[in-house]
Amino acid sequence: MLVETLVKLGGGLLATPGDLDAVLASIAKAARERRLLIVPGGGPFADAVREVDRRVGLPDEAAHWMAVLAMDQYAHLVVSRMEGGVLVSGRDEVAAALAAGRLPVLAPSRWLREADPFPYTWDVTSDSIAAWVAGALGAPRLVLVKPAGAAGSGLVDPYFPKALPASVTSTIVAADCLEALDAALRA
Image (cartoon, rainbow, N blue to C red; front, side, top):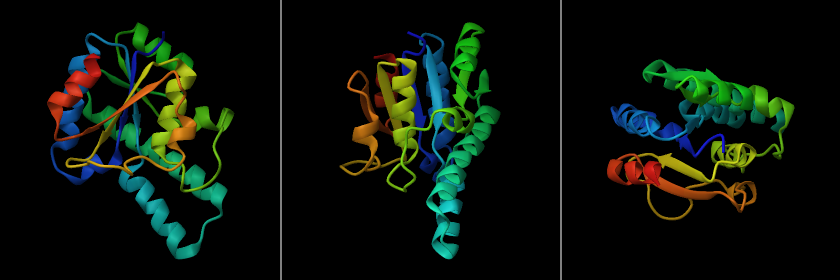
């Protein structure tokens, strides 16, 4: 198995100062013992796309690709804040990063351009994309890190159940529950 656990970082982590760095520290610690891959959400970068769509009405395909590029932007931010992190854009780069002892952070736009299985709708978000990537890499676990205080139903997009392969177990953890995150990353 190439990746043991795929960690999807919600873009909402940027809303509370310190949450992103605390979560990245937990991930870095777990990455010393596990083969992890980080897939970022779109966060405020995707929110900008939603706002433009609301104002001018983007075609669905344009909105989709702009939101995917928002994930790439967040990936650059994550790599800039994580020692040992390296930007990757596909399976081969993930494998090379892990072989070199680095922590891969996926900028998914190039990979998705080659094999995009998704409908162009706001019902598909980075959660579904992360689920698809986990399946494509054979990762048995997906940990979705949501903003502090996240709880209850409705934490993933409507398409997520279709995107999550049966072979992948998913866990949702709020950023303010670092012990739960550590446990999920060690599972």
